[in-house]
Image (cartoon, rainbow, N blue to C red; front, side):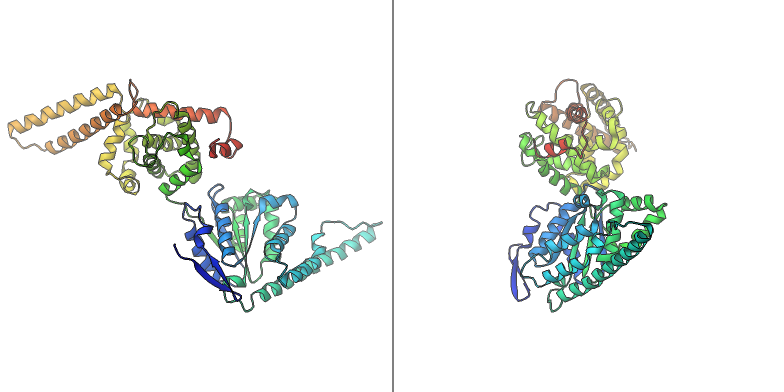
Length: 488
């Protein structure tokens, strides 16, 4: 977009630049935000959406940027990190303070006093866990009964007055999004099970009122398992959530290539000085990204697995700086294959298993998906991939086979006898010739010499990076990950 968009809210013009809120959005999450904006505009009754995705797949990034977009456009939106708020011990306090600070905090708003008065009347509920101090059992029972009555009255009063307050806020608002409050609750799936359940119960009993739309960001499977563990049985967790959540929306995965570009930027791999912009056969960053994206797609790696792969690529790139022997496409490919095949991939790299077996494993999927990532057909790519796993000894074997086939074809031509084997032989000759030409080009134009195959050399560099990670005994969620991500 190149033009400013304007929306008029309560007599004043709010100028917003929609691209600003999503300036760092390399995964095109803004498309989901635009879709939700349209849906939410048409909802007026209490509504709960759960944006479901596994941990570490970008839910917080989406909520934060969507919040900024809504605020830029004059919407009423509040964001709560449930995991951080857990320290308060009371979901009601966390939710009510979040609404006050982020929706009603403007001193010029006439609704601020009404909300503060509403909170005063909710004080018996806020102090519900404080036990009355009495001298005997009779007085204790009487006090508990009265205390219970105060709590229930406080709950009912809070909910009914919140309904009226939210309704009055939406009166005479031309923009439908200003007629409601969008409550964003993040990191719920990182809370203790008991707090998670308390948060959901508090929302259901007190804050699910007309005009408030709640958007949770939590892994639905995790929440179902937590609730099932408390109530017993998988059906219990599923049934509870079905009654509470109106719409489960799965955060869509970005394309493999888009996510690879994002990870390359997040880990600041370019700062290692190994890869350069463009399509250089060995050092081009585009080849690294394409090689990784193609095989990540082929092996159906999750976003979390892809993230872990780029941690390895980052470490390898920084270790390679002194050696200066990069092969971007192959490094990306082997990193993805190692994640999918584990240590078994080393047997292909070291020649302990024929590469034809690996090619056969993914050949059909490769033919289908190669157009999404690479600029060549599967037949040409297959020959190149084969060449990268050749050793000098295997090169000699292929040369001998090529010579025998060429002699056989020559004999057929000289005999002038039609033979059904002629076409398959010519295809095999063309394939072997392509494999050997690629192999010679790699060894001629790079530092891959000696008895190792190019794949074996690159895989050894990859193993060095893995050894560094394993030796430090850190996980993808650890402090080391954050430091590597920053290029430290």
